[in-house]
Image (cartoon, rainbow, N blue to C red; front, side, top):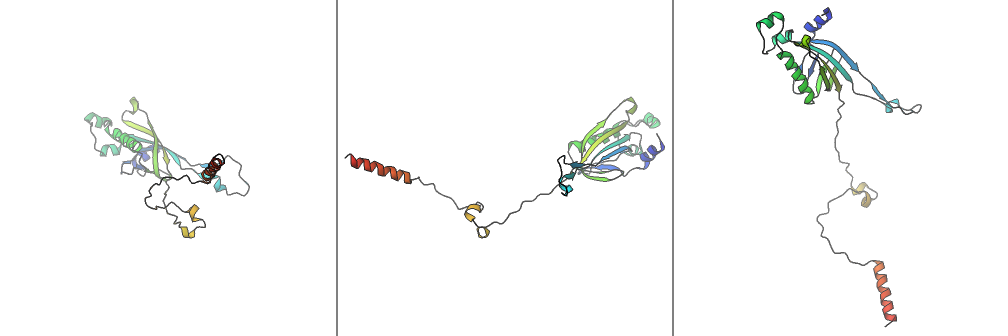
Length: 213
């Protein structure tokens, strides 16, 4: 372990992931952080002089965290976990409960889809979802955990419903453009066949009857 890793392991406590329910994950070691900011740009031609902001939009940032935890770290030593033995204290092997607890917290934040606040070395992200979590275990890392977390920040929008206040007074053709209104309960009436075509046919029948009578 190089000097920078040791310094990060001992003194770097600013980096953290905090969920809406207060669940907080603090890394023992920050291995790498990858930040991605991009624009969504149209592939269609843009007219000369047009507002470029109408053809390109800022996409929400994505970032990848590579954090590490160890059962022999200071945080593990100060935490309450079971499985500690005398031989483990001598060898620096304090059991697996600490990293299991950390791993469970990360998965809880992901599965519950909580919007998290993530503090990194370069910036603070809000409204973050943990998109994926990857970790590997081997005989050499049985008492430590290195996790790769791909995260994405969401752009939250607020919407509201309002009434336009349209009345018959401020309309030119209120019979056609007025909103629906309640006129009470109506009773259905039987339809009467009083159309012009029916009246004409009745007249024709009367004429024929008179001619042949």
